[in-house]
Structure formats: C-alpha cells, structure tokens
Length: 171
Image (tube, rainbow, N blue to C red; front, top):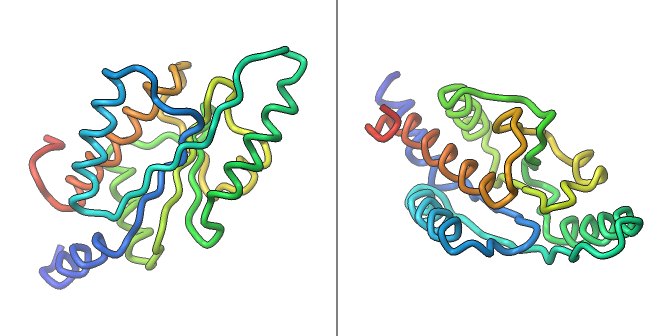
C-alpha cells in the first residue's frame, strides 16, 4: 500500500462516525466494562455514540408483535437514515476479521460518513429495521446472549481498525 493511500486512510478514519444502537442497557457489569473498554479504544480512531433504546419487558408472550413494533419505532427515531445501517442478524453475512477490515476500508474510501450498528434485545430485531439495513451481519451461527454479542461486535470492530491501521493488536 502506498504512502498516499495510507495517509488518506488515516485521514478518513477520523471522519467516520460509529453509532451503536443497543436495545436495552447492559446489565451485567462484567460485560459493561468490556464494552466500555472497546468503545474507548474505538473512539481513539472514530467518533462514537452509544444509544440505548428501551427494551420492553417480557410480559405476555402474545404481545411479542406489539413489543417489537414499539421497539422498531424507537430504533427508527434514533437511526441516521443517511448512514450505512448494519443490523446484527444470525442469518446475515459472516466475515473473517481481515474481510471485515477490508469492508470498512472500502466504505471509508467511498466516503461513508456514518455507520449505525443495531443489536437487538431478547426479542431480536424488528423486521422493519432489518429491511432498512444495508448489511445484515452475523458474528457466529451460534445463539449468544445479546449483551455478549455487543462485546464481540466492538472487539471485532477494534480488531478491524488495527488491521487497517497496521497496528499489532490483530496478530
């Protein structure tokens, strides 16, 4: 990679904003600590914003559709529609860490100003929000707790940044 390209990537990295939309707050202090650590690391390279959308408690299982509709309206009101929207979905596209880094690098080179990442709560992600996404991303085929998924996503984003920047974390 030429010096010019590295220089451009370095400049572009500071122009991109990552917005994370989580349904519900992280309740486990261990998970919250890891989330904050990776958010801090990411924010050295990107502007970041954490947005918590209230999760609607498990009530009557017959109310699932109504609960998802309420969550959908809340999420939609927080999304930046001009951004690149990524939803976490177990049926989505899977990347290796290097592929994810290349994907980010491509978006940055195209001048994408903001990426919104949406991680669902215990009910998952409303279909309407999935349909707004430009990418449905799967971190694994396994079913994981939504709080753990947040940590894994943040760690993988940080790993991708280090790959793009050429720093040794990913080795």
